[in-house]
Length: 116
Length: 390
Ligand SMILES: Cc1cc2nc3c(=O)[nH]c(=O)nc-3n(C[C@H](O)[C@H](O)[C@H](O)COP(=O)(O)OP(=O)(O)OC[C@H]3O[C@@H](n4cnc5c(N)ncnc54)[C@H](O)[C@@H]3O)c2cc1C
Ligand code: FES
Image (tube, rainbow over the protein chains, first blue to last red):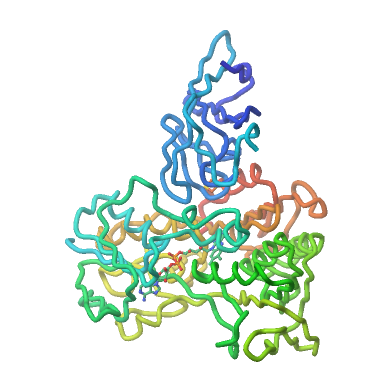
């Protein structure tokens, strides 16, 4: 379990990028839900934490594919593959992320730092 | 509606076909494309694909778990349309009658007159073009790019990254000036010069020299620039020649209403070939950008299925991106509508900045250069503002 931040420091509508390998984005939706997904878009090297959060979806800041934060599913090209999702736990007013053990769907040309 | 025929098997055609399915159309869906390939993505052709960073499989627009029952007819061109009968004639001699027709034939690169048959002269629009250019750049030392639009500027940047000696010839005052305005185009020109692209501005190309193969470019001031490869990035023309005599109104593209409906019922047009009515500027306007095709595919499908009664949401302002070197350029809106432009973040000299274009107090366009996060916020603001069509 990775501590992300105190709950109070991630207001609704905001996102946070965790510099793990690969990076993880944590979102606090306007409805008060918290989700974590891989930060890197599955199309190219864009940070989804820089994207636009709307409801339970984030729109990639570069080419506007939208990912469902609950399932990781993508709506339309240019991205084709879902983004990996992670479990979020809030305990003692702190947000934690439980990293998934599924393989990430990194875009072509982007590798894990450990494998670079 | 029992049969819909989509002409053009690329971005706009695929996305409209998908939108028809997701909006409930369950009939026969035929997609006709003159290229032999399944739909692929063009933007990387001047960027990562040309550089060799990604391969052909990465260009596919379809995911693995596709496709919503599409009958593909690839490698055949549509040669004629009878719009009233909605009958499409194909290059293999067959024809197809449909209840609805989607025109998504895109655009073709404009070629330099007088260079036909001269090896080493390229345009870049298709996968086949990109393969040929990539092969040619692999053995070349000097590249001259004619035209400082997006494709010219991107090819120049990619070739520079591949280590070539690159000269970009632009007849105007700076590359991209027509789209992002002169002040900001100057900042982008500086980025190129700092990274070793030689810029030649304000001159015309009078001739590509060479007998069988190009060996250089002659300019209107008499200069001769030697070159192993020449790329002409001088714009694109809509693929509408096949629609002459179809009964559809044509201009710079297929003339459509603000929902993508063409001048004859049961026919819509979308993507680079289509000039939709822009109610804010009271004129037809052709958009040649990726997200334009994406947003309008959904609208065009609704127009077709509703028989033209669906009322489209006001169009969003045009957004596009361009990657040049390590620089991500993003732009939304119309620079021409602006009377001022101010840098609101960063510094053009530092290679990362955001500029806002205003008409009076109202933002009408935004340029981001390596400012992805901030640009996203501005983009949203412009997209949700009410009077910003186009
Ligand atoms: C090299 C390059 C880089 C680009 N980079 C960017 C970028 O960075 N950002 C951005 O926003 N946009 C970019 N674009 C623009 C973007 O790719 C286009 O806006 C988009 O491809 C338009 O899609 P379309 O389906 O309307 O047309 P097209 O992609 O042109 O597809 C039309 C298809 O129809 C076929 N066709 C034509 N005539 C017929 C016929 N008679 N019968 C059957 N088939 C026919 C064509 O062969 C083609 O396959 C770039 C384009 C190119 C070429
Ligand atoms: S990088 Fe996210 S859609 Fe292209």
